[in-house]
Image 1 (cartoon, helix red, strand yellow):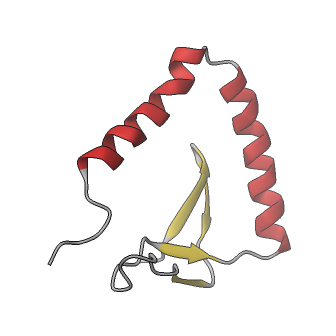
Image 2 (cartoon, rainbow, N blue to C red):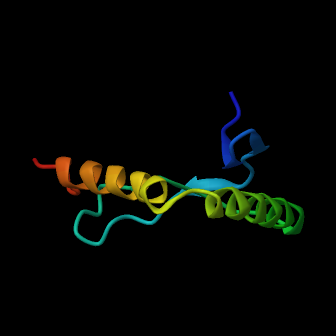
Length: 85
């Protein structure tokens, strides 16, 4: 199955030129994810999706905008960054 990356809800593009992300400085055995390398067409598509998302984001009130950041903080606080071992 080909990996996909999401630019904006309902907007996806095939992931091309994918490779492991750099390791974390404190745990070289841990890779935080994968990096997608994009060409000009993919960059143009991502910019268009970001502009659309910015319009949608601007319509949300502050409480709604805060929700994903508060959830991210909860996840970061609940999990260790470095694998214990």
